[in-house]
Image (cartoon, rainbow, N blue to C red; front, side):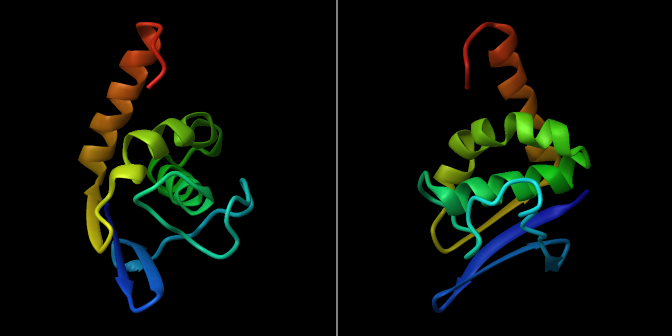
Length: 107
């Protein structure tokens, strides 16, 4: 199970997966070349959502299809100072997003 963590050190924002820096995946979509953010809706949170899902799903197409909904459901609500997500929680969230889509409601 992978562990994704984010925290702040002064003005720096650090995000890791299993203790290593998370690849921002600017090659997929360049929302925020200045880095990740969370706790609101914007370009930094969009980049974080995409990076987490690209790593977690190991499927770029799937990540691109769902990361904006993941941003709204999760990244916008992460605590400002420090947070942690694991693979199991991400899978549950993605399942909830898919369930809403099947019911005709966009998450």
